[in-house]
Image (cartoon, rainbow over all chains, first blue to last red; front, side):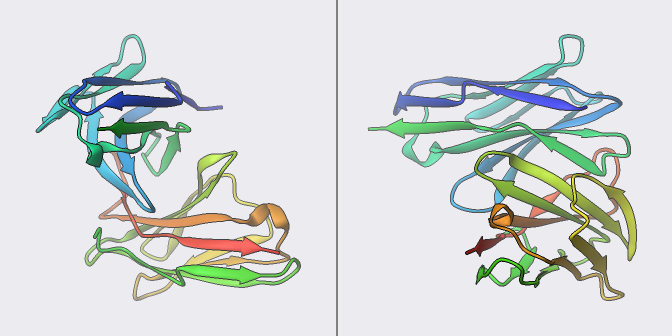
Length: 111
Length: 114
């Protein structure tokens, strides 16, 4: 059975701190790894990492994929209160029809 | 706003009842996916439709069924509802549904079974 594990489960930091969120996976026929941010309702897409794109950066957020060690990290620098959310890691397998999600990391950024 | 719409936003019903959740994908997207998010299970993939045909099935109960119509909107039917079916149900869409594709999520339908 495909498995995606995120750590930590929850994190509280001060504004301006840098955080690193972890995602490890054990799946059959890996295709892609995606990061989503979930605030109140729908997950919103952040990054997708595949064999052809193992490092992504957008503003203060960046992510890398280590296909050998089967993990990914999401880095957020100079955190802001607006970064408070649940961050979800998902792995696409097979024809990438199916995404297997981790349970998420809840990040709270305080003033 | 992802461009994926879902109705209704909230639904409260009783055990044993049947409900239908509706999803309209982003313009141009042929694939629709359904997910269930409960507090103890996280986001779970239910089913994937591509251009009207079922493509993949996940942890979908036999009491649940889905379809995708010619105009590409999709419906998820939940019957003989139980308390444990209370959850957020998300629909997502993508252009085709293959490697390298991102799934964009709708706002979800919150179902409460009393």
